[in-house]
Structures are given as C-alpha cells and as structure tokens.
Amino acid sequence: MSFYEELKGWQGGIGALLGFIALIVGALWNFHLNRRRDAALRAEEVISIAAALYGEIVLLRMEVAGVARAVANVSVSIGTDERNAIVRFDRHFIAAYGNISEAVLYRALAGKLGLLPAELILAITEFHKNIQEVRTGLPLLIDDPTRGYVHGASHVLIPARDAVFDIIPALRMIERMAKMPKPAAAIDLGKAEGVIELERHDD
Image (tube, rainbow, N blue to C red; front, side, top):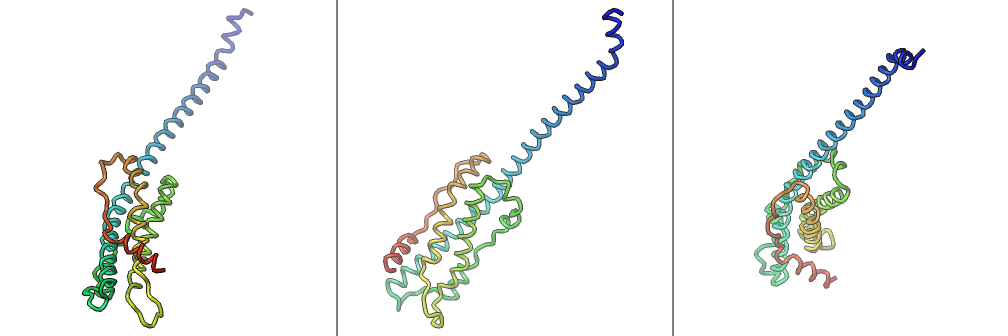
C-alpha cells in the first residue's frame, strides 16, 4: 500500500483531530476575550464606586471643615473672655452644627469596597471614622456639671482636621483613576490648628 493510500485511510481521523484542535483553540480564545471583557467591566465598576464615594467625601470635607471653624471660633471666644462670650457650646450650637450629613453612599456601597485598591479602602474607612468622631464629639463639648470633667475642643478639632487633610492622597488617586479635572482650592480650617496646639500645651 502506498503512502498516499495509507494517508487516505487516516483522512477522517486527521480531520477529526484538526477539528478538535480548532475547537480547543477557539474555546481558549473565547475564554481570553471573556476575561478581558470582565476585567474591563470590573475596572469600570471600580472607577464608578470610587467616583461616587469621592463626591460624598468632598461634600463631607467641606461640611466638617465648617464645623471645625465654628468650634475653633467659639473656643477662642470663650478663652478670651469666658464671662462675656456671646456664643457658647450649648444646645443651640449643637442644633446649628451637630447635624452632619450621613454618609449614605458609603453605607450603600459598603459591600463593594473590597473591589477598591487597599490604600483607598483604608483611607476612606479612616475618613468616615474621623467624621463619626466629630459627630459624636460635638455634644460632649457642652459643659455638664454632673460629668466632673470637660471635653476640650480638640476632641472635635483633631478628627475634623484629620478627616479634611488625611484623605487628600486618596482623593488625588481617585481623580487620576477617573480622569477628573483639577481639584478645587484647599480647605481652610481657620483657627482650628491654633486651638489644638493651645490645648495640647495646656495638657
């Protein structure tokens, strides 16, 4: 039997083998394309989550900075002339500044935070911890004779300062990820740092 005739006998098997190989190659290529598509969708989801949290953080930063300026101003006023201070830490002050907005998006997206880079997760979590400390610390500024001790303004000003400034590297990172425009001007905390330093020296 010639080689050609023998080859004809193997023709069906060779065709089946080539078809199987083509099927495997096609499946692998399809898997590769699906992986690329899934990675692209995941990257878009990460950017969307980060951008949503970014917007909420920017608003909360401005809000807590306003609270810090008010607390510092009242602290300075009381320290300058306690008897004649017009504004004090009382229920009226808490009513005006104590209703810091809730982090609605942060809570809603809590289950998806794990998709973000680790440094973003840590920074965002720390930011909201500081905001919560400001929120819970404000009512403690009211003098309570039954408590036996006084909470200084630093109990609010330090977490407020940290919330405003420590989150900045994370905000810049999100801006690069989402290709956002140049950020707005820096936030001013007024006399907050001076009050913190003064109370630190008093301790």
